[in-house]
Image (tube, rainbow, N blue to C red; front, side, top):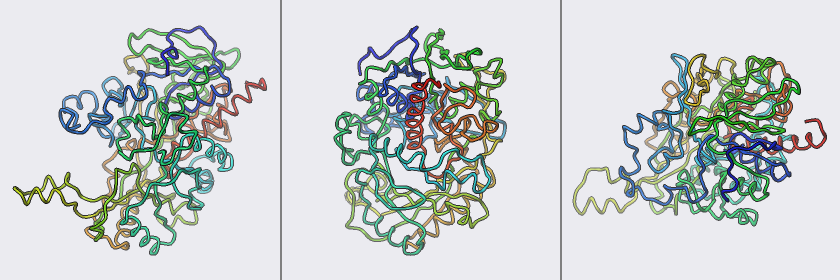
Length: 577
């Protein structure tokens, strides 16, 4: 992309402003620009150029001062929360937010680990790329069991939009015909290892309702002409994706949607622009722009547009809305329902089991596959809730074989020890829960009444805990994973349940806070991600979710965003916005 995309001051009235440049923001910009809308993308962080700024890419651990371990003093000063993320190390830390500059508060006795990536591309540079459709069982779950409000949409409303975004992004996987996990528009799946194929057979023999499938992931296993035209090529199976990928082999804003938006000539980008609040016109009852604070010098400026898409993240979008106060909305814009900021959720990744797969000594694998396996939720409708909790969980996992990296820490000396390093060890395999978190009003984020950040914006204050339902679910998931591996013939099985020790947030799937709904009295958005109270304001990130389901949510962010843009542009052309 050329530098003439980037602006600072502007008195132009754009057709649309998109706040945020992650997965949702990138899709909003692409779809708006391709529909002929002059679009301004506002990003609070720095510019990250595709390929050029992937400074950790291709470097071995030995090329870092501490073998990719981040200096302890630096961690405690700047990355106390971010260090908890599996992807955080010295090769990736520049893509993570600085906790010192980005404080937030939590209610006494609770905690929430908020992982952030404030730069162009956002967390699309760091995500784990698992991509699944939600099913009708997920969209109807709240109504079916009475927890949370009814989603105003069903699978048929998103089905064509899932296909739309999958074709462009590139999703690898296999057609399975499962009613709880609709198939996608697939590129070929990654291969299972021989032990995985064996365990799959055993599990499906013992548990006919459970299917072990290859994970569905946003990687180009076999690029189409559309992907090649984006400048993207085949995944090299390096599994170093969080460093950035110059091949564009995994989907990110930088590799895919941003170049498409820029190609239209309709895109401008305002980086280093921290959105303080929206500008609301009491006369027209519309949003007319945004107020920003310069990330570096703290000066203020304003940008204007006919419509605004908030894609600033579940917590970020709600913060902007809560901080936009007026005579009509003293408690935050579009908050006549009083639910803005409430129903904060995350996935429950806190139980599982691992064991040894005996045999297969003559089997190994080529490359480092960037995806694992999945057992889709087998408790996906109320008639299957057979436990002392509601909803269900999936089990993700995969196999690996001990290698020299593990053997290097064993006792030994001399030739025998060196020879041992050349021989792979035993195969192991694990299954790890991804459970649903119920929507609860008491799980919320709000603006701190007295504390502000360096940009003068009230801090986010979070009160979010696991309910007894989530705790009971993880107790069952631990036992289930143990039983499944046992019946599949694994040995030396160990299990764990860490729900009491881990805060919500670390799944990095925060959802809710600006939820959809049929009724404006109990929701902020309608079924097209449009605010009930302010018709030219759309919110299409994870904050719009009514429930978490079990599946990773990012693919649904994409589909919701593309659908909302289509609706918005049609409404603008008809004069209703």
